[in-house]
Image (cartoon, rainbow, N blue to C red; front, side, top):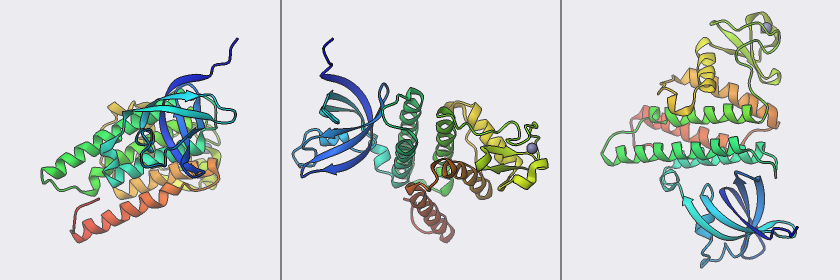
Length: 282
Ligand SMILES: [Zn+2]
């Protein structure tokens, strides 16, 4: 059988790094081959025709050539550039965060079609949300921190499904230690045990998990995104859910994610501005 020398694939661009004077190594996430690195020649030259189709988070149709070490991108055509998402700092940061999660959690060269569809679907949701925010701003409506509730919830949804798809499904129905069914009361949560814990196992809790916190996590896990209701969560509940999810991610990765500090910074700044009643949110 003759070796296949070239092949087409669609891809989401997760990451770039420079190679030599004018080339780039791009990290691609594809439906059939999963995540892998490829060389994009000449894409740092101003006249490059491929560069625009290989921007971070771009969803593109590529033609690839099999290389000795890394495959080469020979042609690229944008399917969706997610332009609106790119023009809203908050949404763009959310998008980069999802790409960072995939880059950290997904091993090279193994297909994860469910995770691919999760990422593509989430970028589309962020794009639509960014468009809605842009339109409202254009119409002179004031944007508040609560306008980020939906995208904030999407990040938690993404984290939950990503972990579940790769075999780290958080335990949310029964106690992760003694297996007792969790009741609607204050329970606990311990990332190193992979989930929620009952009050009898409170000596093993690393944090408390309120009834509403557990409810939101369960709701997200069993509902497809389009059917997740528009919840308005107060700051305490959001902090609790975020702490649970980040605790899990940190446990599995054994480190923090770079995007967290920037997402936090954007949130703190807007909350401050809103308190002072000044200026538009970015
Ligand atoms: Zn227990």
